[in-house]
Image (cartoon, rainbow, N blue to C red; front, side, top):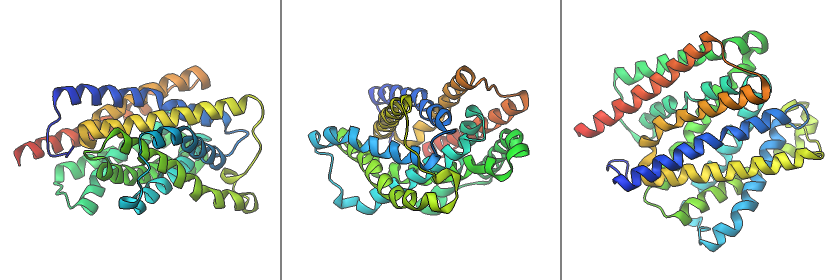
Length: 305
């Protein structure tokens, strides 16, 4: 589907259901990664996540004939590398930040996506959306504030992850238009393949670098079960995102991505006893409001063309 066309009512219902479902389950990945962070590094968890995604999706991709990579080989490689980088950077942030705070900051990604659309897709942008992007970034700094005071620049990692994820979504948007379920499964299969390939040499030298986020250790006992669950959630969640993008387009997806903050806050409170303070909620509100403004502004501009 082209982003220039309105989805049918059936596609809209299905797309909204798919993206809301994805946003509610995806915080489970981050909750598990945070829970494992004291014994397993961000890099190792990210590598295992991509390997498991590859294994889980292989039979479905083969059955659906979704393994065609040639027409967009380098785009698939780039998506895999970008998602690997996003995962490592964001998991590293979770070692020092509350779950809800990290995910809330990560949601400057749609704002960054707006700027990247200008650079890579040549889309026009006016002063209103530029202002919304800047205000949203200011909101992210309010959310980062408590962690930054304790951990310094490490607390800015969610913003780095958001930038990388915006690049990833830019490629996903281009590849997902009008494609079948088989293509969506194949796209996520190659994210797993190329993400794991990219991380393998990095982890091979990781123990010699002294970087704690690239350390390697053998998981023990229940850690294996948690890693399997993380891989399953990651696989299902990102396939749902790809399927939603196919039905309603990346632009229509944007408002529903903020549902993830609800899931993250719930899990953070249940498992880690974290709950955002009032100033942090104010920052979250600024991020959400800025993102929604950009979305509705883009819709208005598109309708007037």
